[in-house]
Length: 388
Length: 151
Image 1: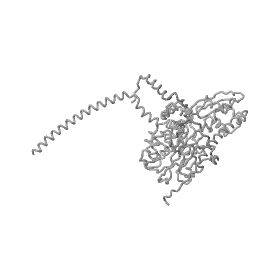
Image 2: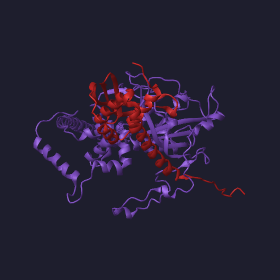
Image 3: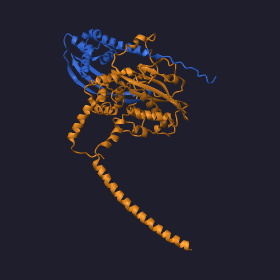
Image 4: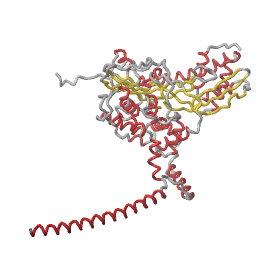
């Protein structure tokens, strides 16, 4: 238990001053602006928005600056901020069929209708440090100059998984016309078993590293079912966010957000009712975050084991294990509270330990005496035996 | 009061006003001959909207995460103007509500269509085209090669 302590105000004040100094670094170097972080560290900003569960690039960048680059601390700050605002409304579900793409790839279909667009990606880079970035330089010219013949308008992009759907090789999901109010884990505690809506909400907010490792474990064989997962489609792009204000009674668009979306499938061997087919896992994050999206989809797929009647044998299939430990703000709270003053607790434990030690010594002494006695008796008997 | 526009038209201008750079609204407001008098039916305020999404894009709805939303309602010459814009943008929401009211007024509608909505649409289209061009330039054709070990 953590017990409140008094005093230490001066030390705390000075410690915070020292933190400010550390944040600023060498004053001979120009200060980093929030705008620079927002523009030039987009992956960090996107991760903080996704796990902080608030789409606000400027505030995410501010959180990163305030946290001196500690992203989990930044996520914590953003989560804390969101609790200060009232929730006006829920949006209509975003329609990712109408995504305006900046990247779209398929690892399953080479000739995906609509084509594959790499967009701004780390893929196919050499992963060698680029020393030219040590120097400040002007941005390169727009790539539009060397577009060649690819200047046609991007055709509307259909969902690649739908092509499998036509053959009936991929499971059918509820259609878009149906609406069910989803559960909300920011309003109700997580209760097991969990439905897919709440699970997906949990996985979006989940720590990228944790979800990555859980997804990885399922690939290395710590999942009894599913076989090799395939990224049928991965897309990054902008979608409209729409609400239906009560006063108006019709849909209005309030803005656009960038999202990364992923469809992952793996073999499902079927049941009495369902034939063998590909079962789907889904990943979705704010901004550009495909590592998280793929692993989220893998974990979602693995956690569908109960619904699909698959054997539950691995950690990644254990929803209580995965979903209870996925949130890095909660985890940080539990783990890092250990460094706060536990003086009284510790004194208590010391007392207990001293008592245990005393009892142990008495016990050991007693046992030793008993053994000595037995040994002596044995010796006596042995001698007798020898005489005989 | 008879409305001279369809719901679809109103949805379209609300979208343009929300997506517009704030500066474009500001410039247009400054260009108006007289600043119209309005009163707030709802003061501009910042809150949150919970963004919903659907599993696999078209399945069961789930809560994706929140986004700041600024809203504001004004009354102006018998018209009620609404401002709803994502982000923490009180000034933007007020101007949006003002323009929404003006756009309902037949006296201003045509002018604003030309001087405000069309330029915003053009700006957004240009941005979209530029992005489409950049994306298009990264379009790939992968081809697979037979490895030959089975031959």
